[in-house]
Image (cartoon, rainbow, N blue to C red; front, side, top):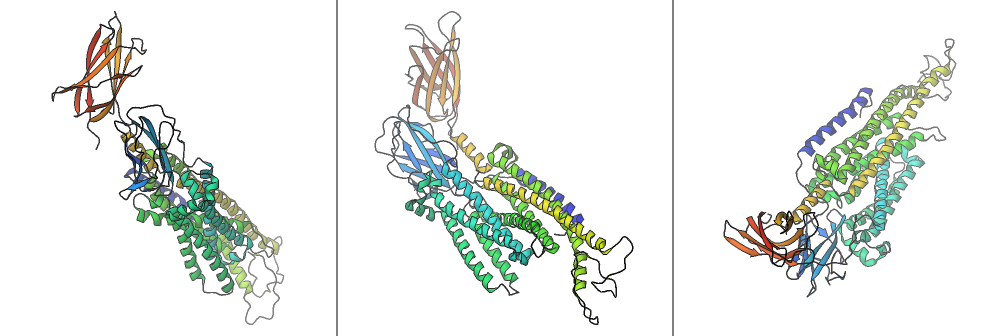
Length: 638
């Protein structure tokens, strides 16, 4: 990045304008996609009332899922499990789960509770009911709420934060040393930062590997050390990615010790070390991308490398900022400070990293959000808005940081030239005595010894000309240190929000699950018909509800109301349906008195169209009235 003032002012505004333009383009024309599995169907369906007990319960999801022995449980009205064997995929289809039920099920309402792991590594759960013969009260208790709202889930989330932080520190500090200032490797705080990043990433990876099993199955914290559960974790994709990360970290520790021991005083290996570091960092980032949001949904072949670039850019920028901040605050006993040229190189590196962050972030936002409406109506969209606001603040802080960097660079250039000239001995000059010279001191006059006294105008002594530039350089460093601190704090906020996003259901998947739920939920046709109750000025109403109001089997419920809206008890209520256009009917619904309302659970309607309801209400032993109305029956969906 150029460090001139004009570029420093213009670049953030240009980048921000590009972000807005690309957001408008990609979010405005987004299509459908999936990430985080959603339940797309079940057999029996939610709320179904069956004539005979089913042999299996089958679930279908929007993407491939994995499950454990207790992932799918079918509970009787007495809260007893009626599926003796664990779930299996149907005909090798990874997006299905099926359990076989016990031979004979008594009548009543059964509860199906499920918890599976979607292809992006996040557990999802839910429950629904169906009835065998007729509905009944049920004692089944199913846990509700987010799968992450458990002790194990919260602890797992904490270690995910630690893992991202360790990656940022390790990658950022290493990039600063290899690209910006090799001498930083000799600075103790920087070495400690590298060690801290490696330790944080290694420890959090071990913890995530142990917690993965109980996190997927909603088990107890003590089950983290269960060998059988750990074995299942190691065979899954998330567990495999964590193991690969540990292997990479172990290899990195050995390699770095070997490199430090054998190449401490050698030169010419900078390019090799940079390539090796880039390869190692990319491999680390792949262990995230291959097991989270990027690994499921549309355009996986593109989404995975984009996610890798996003993670690397985040680490280079944020970890590098923290490294720079440590160096700016350091004043060693030798008085050595980070040179302005190193700050300028990091300024260029950070600008490129932020550009990559913005570009890859826009693509990921399009892939996971999908519409403008989702930004304000889903948890993922709202969290993304917070991240966008934080990124905008980061761009503003970065623009001020680059201004201070440019000023410091302009001040350092003359000082560097002066120091170089002072250290070059003249060929024919007599032996000279070397003296200390402040950074920014003026070049000695021709024929004057570097340490000799020079005549100066009154009121303009040597101390005045040497200290003024030094004072300005210190002021620039203080200003840069303040802005880098602000930028680093905002960067930590961006990192925290990013970690939250990786554990939040993407807006596209949330919208798809809502659509699936709406389609699967039985729709009801409700008809309210007034009738004469046989008493002067007393007119009641009968409400008929057909669920789902489609061709095939329907549930019918009928309630009689008094003129003042209260429930009315009648001796008899009959309902028949006819379709005059096709000459079908009458079909007797065979309503049964269920003490408060009348119902039938096996009315089958063979054809779509407008059906006539013939309702006969007997109000006394000798009085009855027949009323009619119509209802439109639709065909089956799809």
